[in-house]
Length: 455
Image (cartoon, rainbow, N blue to C red; front, side):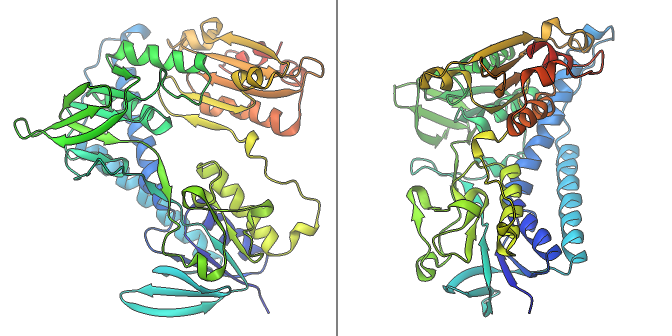
């Protein structure tokens, strides 16, 4: 008999596990309570990147005179932008549904709860049913974190999911949170023409990133007119009865009055109400599900992947986890296998300029006392960057000084999210800087700077 594989959550992890499991012969059922494709993916990631792309086009239009063209006064069309976002979401959603259907995967809309180690109870429209499973994957994702001192109203006090796009373009928006999501929102709204204030709880934006990388982004924010409140932690958001806007109060006494505020202070896992205790599944601090190799929980036939697993909250990581779960669930772990190394996952921040990194960071290496070789090439030395009239940023490669093996790298600049793939491949495959430097690359192209940085 076919292995009965039940997947709770139809996001990137669940979809990849489903399609790969089906190809390997499993009888697959996906239980999804929101949207197949993943709420975090289709309601957060894709809309935000769509709006960022539109904002980037507007920013480019403002710089167009530098390319020998007359100025263009581009203005945002919120209705058109909303239609664009919805159209992309719909196309991706339908594409996912088509792929799952073509493989005979059952999709059940409802909320799932584990009522036993092998039993999943599904509730939809007040009606419950149960299905038995040989293997279970929990891939329920996450949702925006809302602190006790904030009460989002969907109008002026917003969560990230209420910004795609907002009902009206904010005249002045306060972004609370200077991590990846926060800086992307700063870039997005400033590009669209809003005045932006960013509350930075520490002394640099992107506190977990290379200070040199953060400095380039901060300089661009300041050039755009973004106000940075460094060393400030928001403690309250209230509606301003006089203006109809908001008042944001910080722990150091500073107060910001604006038309809107958006909370971008992370996410929390969707692990509540799943019956994990009933099934005997262990959890760790923060509500994440504890996993080991192959994304297995302490209950060997139950897996967890994606944001709920507490690993890197990236769609790319969730997808790879889903594929690994499917292979393990179908017994392919007995073949030669390389465990996932989350330290080698590439990530990107879609600001302007873009930021991307992978592997060992320069600051982390110094903190560990590890000897490294760091080479850096600015895009101002790139012919293609000058042709694009955008010489901002640099490529930095971290390598082992004795062996030349590439350990990591950072890129700040146009198309950083694409260019980092070369360094990511080198890190994963254990390639040397000479392998990059000796590659015969296209001229003129931004990728030439990779070879220069590898010299």
